[in-house]
Length: 328
Ligand code: UT7
Image (cartoon, rainbow, N blue to C red; front, side, top):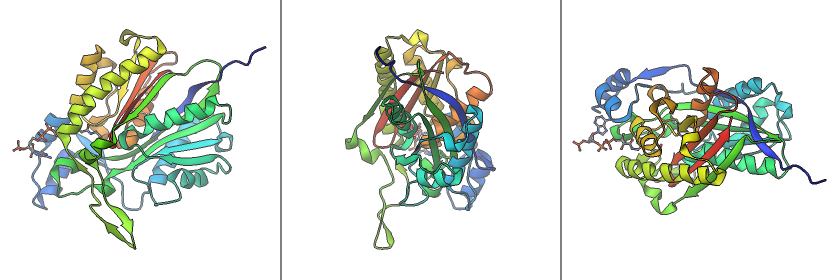
């Protein structure tokens, strides 16, 4: 008798946000005090963002990630002790090392589970799910937490209006588990390191000090153009792998950076606007946390139902991008 191939399914989702939402108007007022000019109208028209959550100084990436993970575990009906793999996607870790995954593992009480971080900026969650899926399908791991957790407010230059109005803090998580049918239907990851400079935080720690620029810098227009092209190609790649068509997508959950990028991607794919899950209006761009935050919201409000086909897409610094096609 041949062994059945192992597949991976989502057993539960969760998310967490800092307690304080900051509206565009409030942010514009604060920035004006520094001589930085922006407006609610500009931010909404160019991005669709109306507010973002900004963490209080004492909140850590690990704490926020742990809260999202707890909710995903609750939704799946599992104890932390039943998890044997923790993958955290973050570009804003609490420490140089150990990984945020290890810090979360300790807080959860999931001792013994393998734990490591994946650093692929806004594509991080899609990278993390792909890695965890592959490890589950080897048979070495049975139940994984994949968490996207970010504190982008810590790397924003509040004097740079081209970036500081765009980002927010948050975390989202899924429990993935071995199953006898998918679940995850196809996934593909890509990067183009030659485009590193269009979105980066170039500074590093050396000899007790930050060397180089510690703030996020972005050439917004260059990122915008690349994003629309790669998201369309990446969607078609995973659909091809799964032998499916765009007409079979029930829900598109792209990285939440800009409603204009999401609308352009949906248009190119022929996916209707009301099939796109959008949270960027309330969360801003939360980098690796944006896709699991949006997924959790859509699962909890009943839009995403068991059996439906969902396309998750990440794109961002690196330059990195990728897609995960799954049957929820
Ligand atoms: O998370 C990773 C993925 N990231 C992304 O996908 C972001 C991709 N890029 C974008 O979303 C857009 O390019 C932005 C939202 C960043 C910018 O929108 P845009 O339509 O490309 O605007 P722009 O950069 O062409 O700037 C237009 C004008 C400029 O003024 P001038 O030169 O026309 O006089 C900017 O100086 O808007 C000005 N501007 C602002 N004005 C008010 C830039 N930032 C602001 C601001 N408030 N915050």
